Length: 433
Image (tube, rainbow, N blue to C red):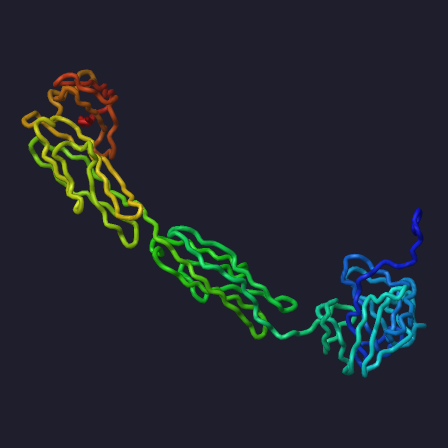
């Protein structure tokens, strides 16, 4: 109906296809109406809406477009099929049976089938040559332009034709340039032209030992390391289908891994004690994680005490402090530098305590205890900082500070400690600075 507009008797356009036919059916499919083996063809609706064919015309002579008009009640559901018996027995159409019967038959020696709108517009047509008994002619895949002779007819169902296996097609892979220590990750892709598409599996023909690829998804992951730098790697990815026989295709690409400099690391240095006029020497060591290792050199900061030196190649430190430098605690910064581009370095600080010659060694003297209170005197140097620590047994692994660090304002200092009920307590005094 067209209320408020000009009436139009033209039926809406439909998209359906004459999808399969058999022009010499001797034993493939029996007509449910009379149990006879007769010619047939099917019409396929590939769309998503119900298609009614009532009022449309079918013919086996394309010059006679209105040979058989489809009666009401014949529709094809989305993705469905209508089987048409070309048995010249249109009187067998019955609302209780879904198949359609037309008033013409097909010729094994060659014929045509056409579907037309009520106003004579061609919806679809198939012209065929000589046919083989019990072999159908069908579009594959459904609704496509290609027609195949099918020894496995599929009336009222999707057509199937066993096409020969073809190899998958891998997408191109681009060469890569990355820094060592970085992650390279991407997804290799491939397509398969077979219908239905085959299952594809990914693998390596050539790859670094720690690279991985997911067989099902093609996800490639390679975490490069220091040892990979400065090298080029040819990687070949193979994709294989599960056809018979299984076929495969490969793609190769190159990954150039660029060296990147990593800073060296100094091995920690313990503090030293030395008397004025005596020499203190030790060897500084460092490691370099680069492969191959870089050449390392050793240096002292500009604030190093006068007379201190370090061999740039061997890392041997040497210093004989003078009387003018005693007493004192010197925080000396030592650096190691590689010859990479850019050059990188590491640094550490070593504390060297210089004692005045002839002064009494740092120690407690004249300890006294009364009523659980211990008096702890020690020989000190004015202007230096000291730390007192204790533990209750020799088996204890750590010392506990006895109050805050003390800045000496005299040549002799002392503190007191209430040991309470402890049967014993072990003390020590440290020169901090």
